[in-house]
Length: 564
Image (cartoon, rainbow, N blue to C red):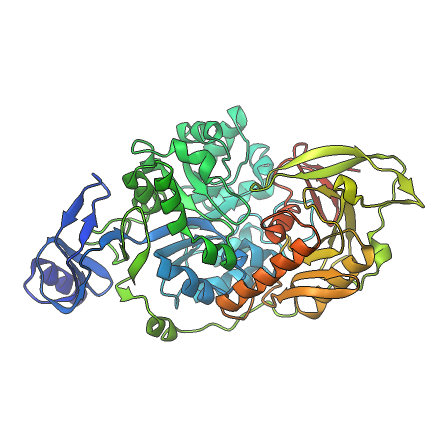
């Protein structure tokens, strides 16, 4: 009651506000107008706008525009390659004050312990991390993950203050064909928030999927696909990650009419891309540059996101809302000059004052010791299934190429850009090794290996030389996971990710610099992809059409079966 009365008293001006932002203009997310007046804050709550206030602390924001804190509506913090604490330090100064995450990457390695780690971390970060409960661990029955999370395990994790609902339901065939395990999870969250994931789904199958109570969709890659999903009641999240880049395709659909039902997300974005381009701030800048109205862009990043996820306490700079505020140089520039997260001014001192949670998932790479012979591909027919990369998308093409059999092996062919790809089970369960071919890397020599391998996070490796592939994969076991580039029997570059084989223990600046070295090393092997490491990771995700590979073999995602 004391806090309630204090907020009312400060909002009325009967007592001095804790903080007053003075001199800036406020973006009205309802009309798009820029409004004059102070912003008064009591604790973590905005209590006054469009008036004059006295404050115990007055912050001069003259010449700046005040907008609500940005909300990333779907991401996997693990894909930033740093811990939640370093992710907080990396993107909160850019204006991202709420992150709605799905920790299914770490959950696929160590199960519920990984989700508990994120839940506890959310109590200490400056940004407000909302931790959805992972719906598909593993994503399908066609891979070997480190853990499984049935409905009973999810129920035990419910009720945490950071929780909003059930994270992306990737097993869309399991939904529309009423798989019993899927039905249990959907029933557990019925009436609550359930995130979607249904690439290219349409017609009656989409109707069935949405009828399950699934509310959002971030996998739309064309305006036509997104529009059908909007018309069937889904909130469409425009995604721009390090690999999945859908913003330019979907931006024409975002306008003042549709923006109440569209949001922004990054899904998977690493510190190198954040450093070079930005995060949600980059998306806002780029969309406005391409012709989107500032109202639509900022509304999608704030108010619409809050409404889509039932976060009634944020999304506007208005009395009663959480004091998540970004002071930008201009609407077009979207360069944050000051950020408040829950009323706390984001600064080095504020980051230093946070609590801490010990990392989990150490020693998680338990893979067989490999030799070059493990990467031979046997077969009795030259017709070969080949994964075709689409740069900037996680969709792939299902190609067919004739590859001759020489000495019982189908060899990689640099002239045709036919590169060996392999997935090695690394959770200590069965030691599976599956090999195939991929086109699109441009690799001419050496090998690249990674334990960031969606969503099972086994070892994924591509190469032209089998011995280099073995060297790179074995090195991952020695450094507890990460990325390795090798050539000629030597490691050219590496990044250790010892937290479940997914996250570094180093500051994000160090990770960013090592990613630069890895990118240059990959280019020295002939790689033409801008982001080869995360592109590699998605080649193992068997819920994204059309052809993928797991430790159990090549997967035809369209028919949802392993190719014999």
